[in-house]
Amino acid sequence: MIDRIGDAPLLSLEGSHDSFSYWVDEKSPVGPDQATVIKRLARISLVRKIMKKWSVTQNLTFKEQLEGGIRYFDLRVSSKPGEVGKETYFIHGLFGIKVWDGLKEMNSFLEQHPKEVIFLDFNHFYAMDDSHHHFLINRIRSAFESKLCCVQCVEYVTLLYMWEKKHQVLIFYHHPLYQEYPFLWPGNKMPAPWANTTNVHKLLQFLETTLGERSRYGTFHVSQAILTPRVKTIARHLIRGLKNTLVHRNLPMILNWVKAQKPGVMGVNIITSDFVELVDFAATVIALNDLLLEED
Image (cartoon, rainbow, N blue to C red):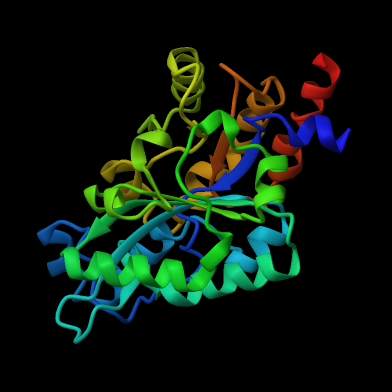
């Protein structure tokens, strides 16, 4: 059974949206990913507290997410304007932990679980010039070393292939500098269409449509099972925050959609969600792989 699952190129994996946002620093300046008007308003500490309620999309640390079955991580990165050096931080409105600290935490898990494979998707960069990128890329290489899987045909990347090569990490890097490093996969190999809606019915229709339109070969695919607040949503529910306003009440319907999916070519590949621990999301997504055995 392991061989049959391990030889399938596109397994169904669970991922987290804004994976690093379990901790953001409400005392630091607002990040460069925000509009100028927000930066001005955020000089008021109460505004930053409200921002935190809407910036946090996960409760679990990287280690806890990994232990819970999460294998795809959605990462946004920034330098801190005015800070000396090239250090980079995770960011979602407010600054999170240093990227280096997150990479070390993940690598520690991989050292203890040599057959586990993770996907790191660096898809947004802010306030970073080429020197910041080279610094970050060298940090990535230092953290994972021989665990990094170099770019090649997506269909070759099966669990059996990764185990044989002793690779555990695929890095997707949405910046032209990926071309200079063989272990950086281009961002177009990990498309992640975004519904950008607060309506769960529109979200599910969008997920169905984009699955039907996805490339049959040559890429992975992310289904973002997330709802995105609009400005008026935040204005109406300032204190409640993202989890209590959008996530809690819509998760059951989203989970039912997940249960009806199939993995493999033209099916689901990676499904991301907010607050991955609220329901048994990871186990539900992973269980879809049993359908590969039934087909076999």
